[in-house]
Length: 257
Image (tube, rainbow, N blue to C red; front, side):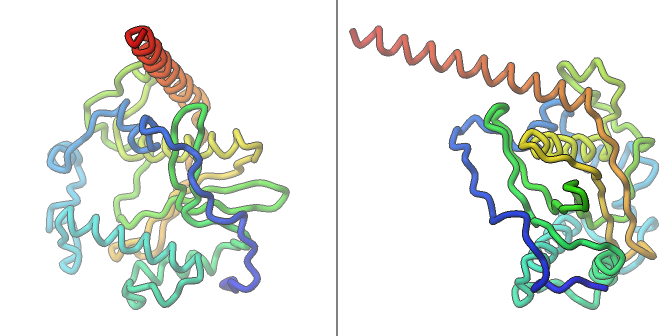
């Protein structure tokens, strides 16, 4: 049964950001630091599945990468409005297959307490991000859900696009693919929430797309070692930047005298 918004208890009010420093990095920017950007044209050439090849798509879904991205952003916004009860702001086609998949997902899930687009941040690591959906599960457990409009269901066995991880992540056997990036992002969100004293029970990516018969759910595993390594590296970099800025400040004071 789809839940009634009159019965939903939000986890908390929309949380304003407390970080005002221009050196703060988003979770996406942080992951991109370790995985050089892979252009869509590179993905097209390296992946056995070519999402830009019309022969591998339904006729109605021959979208350019930019059109597909626009559709994805529109669906994300519609889902956010839905969870916030702002139904009049939803402009997404409610007859589309992917929207019906989203409603079917809600019918099959027992989501009673949640926060859509929750802002998560760590002043300790100068890092912030926004989780698509954080759910409050029984026994004080939390869950994280990332929504994607895609028929390319990523997993850890996906083709490696090359451009191997840089920095200290070279010590880990990681592929540079969408699964790794998505997994690291969710794990960094998880780490920020758990550092606030909460326990995250599950992390999932839910896929909606006209080419899919039904929505698909991918369970995301915990990556403690890699996540902690990224956090420690980010703290080290931030402390070094902080010390450099402090030394410049002291130098300016000495010059004045």
